[in-house]
Image (cartoon, rainbow over all chains, first blue to last red; front, side, top):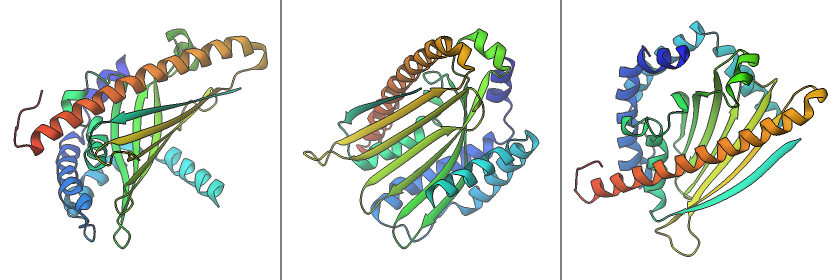
Length: 78
Length: 186
C-alpha cells in the first residue's frame, strides 16, 4: 500500500502529463481523426513531459527493462 | 499451462469516439476511482507516420500486482509494470493495442490484444475484440497451486476488463455530450 500512495500523489511529472494529454486528446479528435495527420501539434508539451518521464524511469531503474522488452519483441517480429 | 480467452463487445458509438475514449480511459481524473487497479500510465514513446496516417504509441502502465496478498508477499512486489504498444490506422479505421507485463515475469506472463474496428453491419458502432493469455511459471511441485493462481488471475482480469469497458462506455457518453454541445460531465 505504501507504493500506491507514493505513485498516486507525488508523481513529479503529473502537471506536464496533464498538459500533454490535453493537447494530444484535442489534436487526436480534431485533427488526426479528420485526416489532418501531416503534423503533430503537441511537440513542445511532449518534449517537456517525455524528458520528465524518462528521467523518472531511470531514477527507478525501470528504463532498461522497457528497452529490453522492446528489443526482445523486435527480434520476435523479424 | 497457458490460459487463453477471447471477449467481444459492441460500443454503440462511432470508431473515432471510441478510440478517443481509449486515450482518456486511464488519464481522465473522473475514471481513476473506478479503475483503482491502475496506478499510473505514462506515454513513453510516440511516432506519427504522417504519410500513412498511422500513430504508434508506447505507454508504461503500473498496476497492482495480480494474485492474492500472500503471493505478493512471497514475490516481494505489490505492483507490476506493463508496456502497452498501440497502432492507430486512421485511414483504415483500425486500432490495435498489445499489453504485456515487463516485471514479475518469473511468476506470470500476461498478454492482452485488443482490436477496435467499425461494426461490419453498422458503421456508427464499434466492435472490440480482445484476446488475453495468462500463464503462471512456478516450480512444478507447486503446479496445482499455480493452476489455482492462474484461475484467480483470469477471474481478476475478466473483472477488470469488464470495469474497463464500463469506463469506456462512460467516456464515450461524455464525449458524445460534448460533441452535442452539452458541456456537462456526469
